[in-house]
Length: 360
Image (cartoon, rainbow, N blue to C red):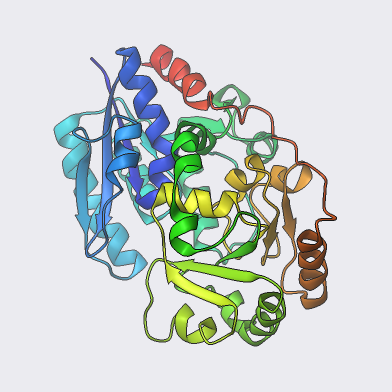
């Protein structure tokens, strides 16, 4: 039986490839080989998430020692070379666009193994963003380009990719959200945190703090202090290091800096937030599908559908606009319901699997 290696690192990558693993494993036509990159010192995924997709006993793990992006990518390329030589896959599918994803894509391409891009064509047009460079690299070496929204099609065609290799499949992260939504609804995390649904907002900041956010730290502190005077702000983060979010924002009354919850609990926290203020694009699709207002502290997004029909507002660090929009949302006057982008319906993995099975 032909094989497909599915590569993920962390929560973001795993939620992209997990639905495809379940679908391929259920069909029995193309053997999926799930591979998780686990940085030294970081916990692996929660057992409940692995169980939801049938991954408990099937997941291979590749350890990686944290280092510079170049050192980390080089080490992963050597690890993937050994793995691909052993498994001899017919396809390699990177989940996401972090260092693990780009290392897997480059290694597979140099070994003559077809690479499959799961969210091809996403562009924020900011070449200073490492993830943007990784997206460009992964797409450039991919044999098949599955796009999650119409902008991906337009971008790839404008960049000269052949349209017969571009397939509109939808967003696999939404497959994961819908697969977990029952567990999300039953999560008791709000009771643990002592908050009521829609009576708080959530702040999600990249760690380490993005340079743009760090450069606007004083303005952000002023904005958060104003919002926290009217509602509780939850600020989850992966670590609480000295000089991190706790030191930067933890002294502001009304802000609660807390360890990052597990996947299901985090989704519940986000789902019941009055709004989410964030400088990361990671949860824009889920927030749109859950109809949670998202105020993005960025100058753009690689997922314009979340702005065009969804709940996402690109707001940058405009203090007056942030405060105005937060006030409207908290007053209950923001009643517009977002639309869900086309094919964000929980069937993306099925559409991708059908193509891979025929191609294989």
